Amino acid sequence: MDISHSVPHQDIRSGAFTLGQAYHCFPQGTIHLAVVDPGVGTARHAIVVYAGGHLFVAPDNGLLTYVFEREESAQAYRITEDHYFRKPVSSTFHGRDIFAPPLLG
Image (cartoon, rainbow, N blue to C red; front, side, top):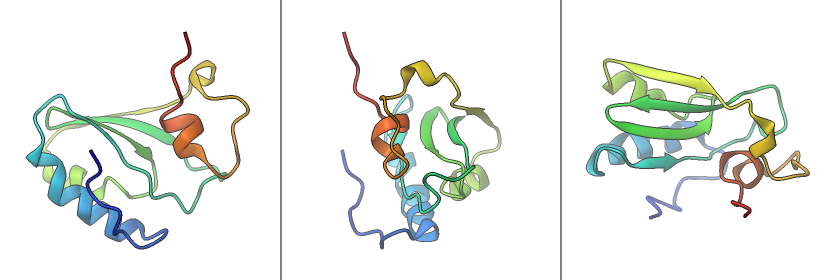
């Protein structure tokens, strides 16, 4: 389910606010994939965060700011197992290649 396609292009603050206002409306156990990533191709990390009974997959660029502020405890992990990435990894489309690669049989 798409929360919004109204976040202005590359506006991390707006994306963080939108996600922070919406995620708690979903049941615990929901996996939220959030990508507003003007730093794609840079040294910023891809992360998975467990907070408030939800999982978040996102770039480590401030997009989860409101989640961290709202939830008392959060566990964050860097995504490093590159054998799961779509190959070749594009320098401009980590949303497809790292955050949500297609599953291959």
